[in-house]
Image 1 (cartoon, rainbow, N blue to C red):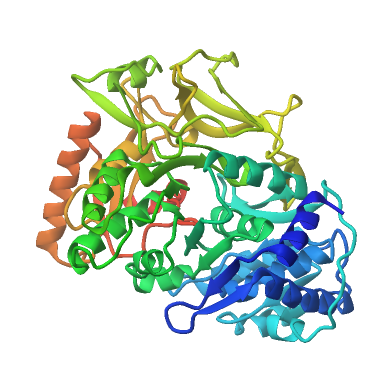
Image 2 (tube, rainbow, N blue to C red; image 1 turned 90 degrees about the horizontal axis):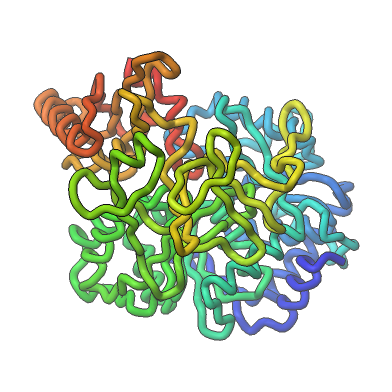
Length: 544
């Protein structure tokens, strides 16, 4: 039996902690032993459906109360879980169906497990010749003991997409999960007796599925979990749950904290929530903006939020979840560097005057992970040299399942090229500057889209996390860029003109370059990944 499954089943039997779902309408607390018993029934039904070791099972379900026992039941059969991307009210359903069919074919799914609110997809999938099982049916299966597993068995196939938009599934083994889970618990000073995790992150994203469902289930930790739709319907449900359950740990992308800060200021009375219990609020999935963190700390102060609780982090599906995060209890550390030197000479030289760039330190690599910075010539760079970030270690995936077969993620020496640009400080802390494929080169300078987007996001009326810098004339001698932003007043010509002027002004002030064009769009127009990251390569048509 693998260490992952052995430990998870043992903790299910011994843990006094539980799994809380259904807030705010129908809160339900189950012990991990109860989750395990439901998983045994699901495993029995999966066995009857012919699911066995090495198979892949796709899951299209929204409720964490169903996802947890379903995933564990799949692992009890020695199979792997692929959480399908979920459609939203703004999703093009025809395109989603096409992409989902491609994914199911790519991973060669033995079966697809479906539940609410996606039951309408069941007959469509059946008509395509797929074995469709519902969670309700699986829960009626005969309780079954787990089959044997090995550390190198695949547990999760985490969907992602390449630069072309073609789907890929990162293969995460039992050993990958254990290595990263145990490294994270050391890094965050996790205490099984006192820590309470609160999460709304989607289970089709690596942070939501691995970091904030699989890992708590593995350790038998106290977990409160709602859905992303619950969060989007009522952002303040998040702090209410932290207060209600005395949550000590949570996580979210940068844009969610920005949204939370605005809601706290506009819709909450000081003292309405007590957030002083929160000791560890991880910010990851997208680049952390120091101004947003500072704004959150200011907005959260009347509610007891402590600045030292904010934990900027760096990670990706290819490393299971986390690569690094800032030291526990230290709060955000900003590395301020000369913006011109980093753009022209690719050196992060500390500076406090003149044209500077404030970047967030993301801490040292977690135990079991090595990290290096590689220059254009392939040489390893010294401290503060800006280049491509590469990582290796036990949590790093071996590779991907793709439409053309298996593709390795590591080179012959075990290094994974993240595609991110960054540097190491003298203390060995990681700092990320941006994605190499997104860098805009103008007048011999590297301009990072995140800087442009951050500047545009400062304009009143621009929706949080809804500004994208689009590279134009890529590879030509005179590259340039345009900016697209979302605004609820997109159909008001006067407001559009104001936003266009102010965005251009803020961008010039930030990067000393003028955008070719600023476009104001309706909410939901800018393409994003299912986890909320900007799809810059897919945004070109918006600014034409």
